[in-house]
Image (tube, rainbow, N blue to C red; front, side, top):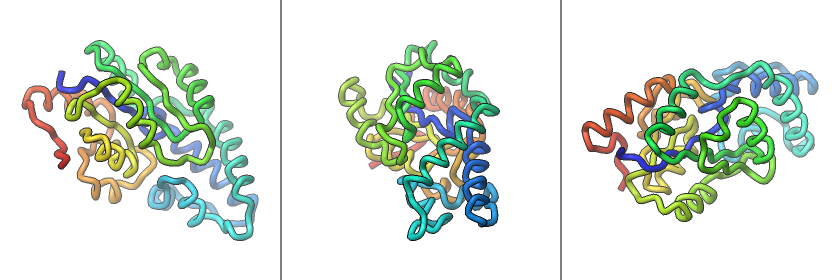
Length: 224
């Protein structure tokens, strides 16, 4: 196969958790007497680091940021009970596992929480590495991805990043990797369009994209 390694994002890519995130944010806004936001506004504001989102949606000058993070995570975990994996996630994971491609999750989520959720959904054993964050501040993932690929010996041009944020495209560029972004995730498609990454609507399409790249022997995303 063209790819020896695939780096997955978790939230919004493999896990369909947008509704739980939005509901938790709106609960917090209601606590503060503020009107709710809709999914389009959420997707326009979300980003890495996550503090940029809270600066737009909340009044951080008069609100305790640490309390916001705590309340968000409590609400998120409550609503997550009704969420599942994204459409085509299990099939895509199984497809790459059968091909012998090493798969890793590199996420801004807290690592302990990430491992629990991946075990809950029955996919943990399919991954060569799970690299979450040491905190709940949803910062950059790039350093962890770089360290993982250096350790694993992956060669440039043989790595694919699959995510749903501009930050995932930034990570791919840093790694010299190809990038596919999911339009049904956390970030608005108008922002994803600016990255130059290949866009797909669901993970069933990912298998076809990778098989086509293999047949053509060409990159579908070019990096300098």
